[in-house]
Image (cartoon, rainbow, N blue to C red; front, side, top):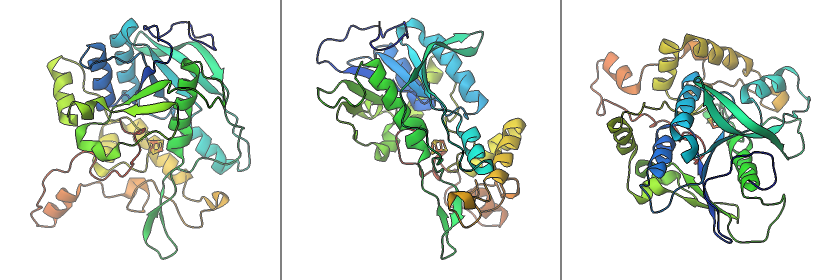
Length: 334
Ligand code: SF4
């Protein structure tokens, strides 16, 4: 039984006193999917006790489908919890259309089960959250700075929709009291960053949480993870992140436009909604796409394609998938 709540299924291991619980921060992308399965299969010296998925409720449908598969595959061997403080898209639209309205969405935590390919939150509880606020966590939209140069707005969404909910979930799962400061490290948080992304590693800013990067320790790259999954016949995860994340590159946008027309329409609609953010103190137009044009008017060719169409031979024919992404936290895109 987990302390402090009504979620019934505890992580499988009895945690010794003073021993840290090991909890995976699960984004449901390539690396964290591989890490969850590798841990279950005993590829590391130790295994994680549970995984936590921070849900912004605006992931592409393919991510939720993959997560449902993963939850079913992991079964009782590795319990997966979902924590969420709300729907980032709906919250943002509300802040634009009804500025000043307080956002008091509950912070919820439940254990995920997959039933007929659908995710179900079992034993969901409401966790304490910071006081409801009228301000919306800023997303890193593309704008022009006062000098007219391309810039991005501050990114607060990762902290508000991922880092803090995960921390609240870890606090609950390990039985720490709110605002309890003393005590040993109680959580070893496993993060699915691969060797090719080592620069995204960082130490925890929370005294009772330490970060661990098992893929880097094993010198496994993203490609290694993909091969490991493919060798075992597991499905290839799609990139996990908010559908309308301004960090997406052209390759991603084009994939959405060409293969998920409903989601493309959703992102285009959101892009229109966020154009005028004067109520949020932004005195220029904001855009989802780095070209600072409406999303449905952006040139979605890759840089290599643009060069080739212009009759030039690019030095690099294929850009790595995340080459243009500058989201540098560990909590998005894993
Ligand atoms: S995926 Fe993008 S929009 Fe979503 S929380 Fe992370 S940085 Fe913000």
